[in-house]
Amino acid sequence: MDVIRLLPDSVANQIAAGEVIQRPASCLKELVENALDAGATHIQIIVRDAGRTLLQVIDNGVGMSETDARLAFERHATSKIKEAADLFRLHTMGFRGEALASICAVAHVEVMTRRKEDEVGTLLEIAGSEVLRQEPIACPVGTNIKVKNLFYNVPVRRKFLKTDQTEMRNLIQDFYRIVLVWPKVQFTLVHNDEILLELPAGSEKQRIGQLFSRSVKQDYTAAFVDLKVETEAVSIHGFVGKPESASKQPQQYLFVNGRYMRHPYFHKAILTAYQGTLTADANPSYFVYFEVDPGTIDVNIHPTKTEIKFQDEQMIFQILLAAVRESLGKFNVSPSLDFDVEGRPEIPTRDRSSQPSFAMPVISNETHYNPFHSRQNEAPREWQKLYDGLHKPEAELFAKEQVSVPTGTPTAVGNRYIVLPDGDGLMIIHRVRARACVLYDIYMRQISAEQGVREQLLFPDIWDLDADQIPLVQSLQEDLRYLGFELEQLSPLSFSVNAVPPQLNGQNALQVLQNIVADVMATGSSLRTEWQKSIALTLAYSAAGGQQPLTDSEQKELIDQLFRLPSFTRTPDGKIVLLRISEEEIARKF
Ligand code: ADP
Ligand code: MG
Image (cartoon, rainbow, N blue to C red; front, side):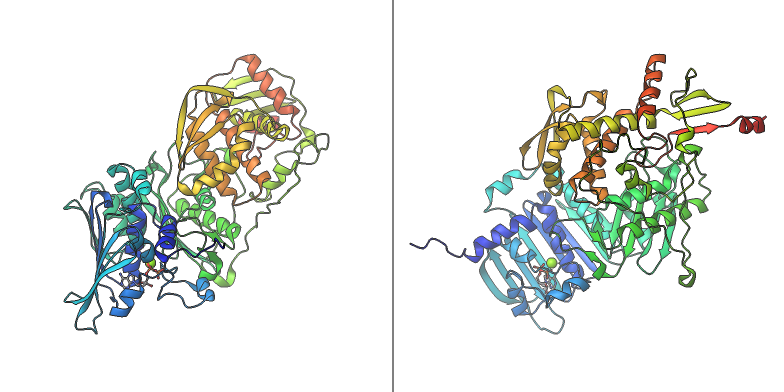
């Protein structure tokens, strides 16, 4: 007997819905994007019970004909692309033709829509992919869609929804991500009969102010400087917060071609531009908008994904870094400690004819990397090559062979530096970076030996993640174990952290894990060896932190360990570990 059969459309749609519509926020996002694609200039959103009971979007866009209204709910029915090649020149928010089909598979949907050339509009009622009613109706031009009782027929999904407060937070977050790129569109957001946000049309800067100013008196945007750069490959504009306005809860938004994106690598570029200007644990806010040829990015990864791949990520990194530096520089943001001096890329001019070329970072992909093969070898290790490219070639402070193990007695300077007599001068060691180098070496060995030490937690921590981070964390799980983290998946979106590395010294393990995930994503690599280096480095920095004083013997041991490394003048990510001040320099100061 043959056993294979095709699933009925209603079932197929329900399965697809699981992908596209995960929660009320994703449903609302699809509806609002449709309204924007329809050219609406005014969009009203009405939400009840965080979207569980009702999500309604009323727009004044082009509306749909009777036939189109019906077709819109079929799977892969879209007016936005015709052929595969269109995927590479996308200018609309939607294109898959999946959203409405998915939504009507898992909710009661009611649409009223009319085009301006039609006398009467269409009313359509659908539930569980079945059309219940279709009739002409008098209604304004545009589309008014109600999505009721989301997931009414998918009890598991409904059960997995979080509290109203959490769902509403997600919904507002997605809403922000949209309205920040559509300042010329007027939005109203109503929740349980209360107006939450009323956003008149305006400029980008005004929209930012509308969303984030705490009161009418405060101008949130006053703490920002403009950012603007145009090159062949990309134009970037936006607003970056002045360093003094950095905070523990910054607003950080990246957009490309009118779409919100997460891009840890570009985030890093921005943070790098602030280097040395921020106090510990304060982070800058920024709103940065990229425009690129749609053919050079890939948005087609996953319907709910916010990660976007760019063709020229490394070049854009450099352009962005330089542009942010320039913007901050204009406002006299002073440079930093000598320890933080790094090769500064040329500032790109806006004049295309005299565009400077950027030093392109060279990132090597060493698939067979073994950290111990080059031990006796004096050549820099692979991880150094990896990071060298990120910094402009700059003369090393001193040639390595000139540094011999210092024999004098080390003295602590504050809790940050260690000073040693060094020949006829002084050597200053950056304590945290020195320790990071030492730990990095240890961690890389643990990974390559596939074993490490861990400390069992009496009360495991629960680590909640975004759906799109889960696969990555799953694939990091084993390497994390060699470093001491024992993770166990608890539910589709959470892990329990049962053990942590002993060196964490009471640091927040979840925070460290979050940083690890962000940094691994920032490598933009899919190679496990790259991930391992990234994990080891992030953990090394986390564990190296802390300003408590060291005893004399601890200091001595740190220096011994440092000087036993095959390379110790710079951290794996290229930061300076040692400074030498010669007698002449000291004399000059006098
Ligand atoms: P996509 O947006 O990917 O094309 P959807 O399922 O979201 O797929 O929508 C299917 C089609 O329905 C759209 O291509 C569009 O033609 C039409 N549509 C959906 N919402 C609206 C709206 N608010 N106004 C006008 N047309 C709409
Ligand atoms: Mg759509």
